[in-house]
Amino acid sequence: MIHAGFHFVFTALWFLFLKKKLNSVNSYRPLLLSLVLSFFFGILIELMQRYFTVTRNADVLDVVADVAGSLVVVLLVFLLNKYNGVVDKI
Image (cartoon, rainbow, N blue to C red; front, side, top):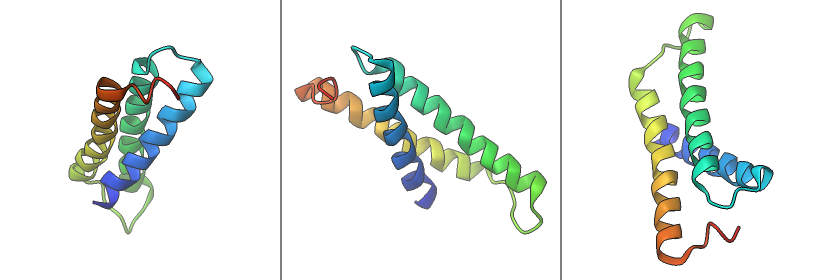
């Protein structure tokens, strides 16, 4: 739950930042970029735990939880846009 929650916030904040910086008319490009960024960040953290620490181990299920949290943001953005277009107004 911690991994999913962290990546939910991480992806949502990156999405909002990229949407503003890219001046994107639609929300698909910043959403995809934030999802990819979150995915690779999760993998990078797990690899760092595996190779650079002695007290932590890499876990594939942590990456799955990271992706699940990020996908919730994607789903939420799609639903908010579909039913009231609130994300495109940001």
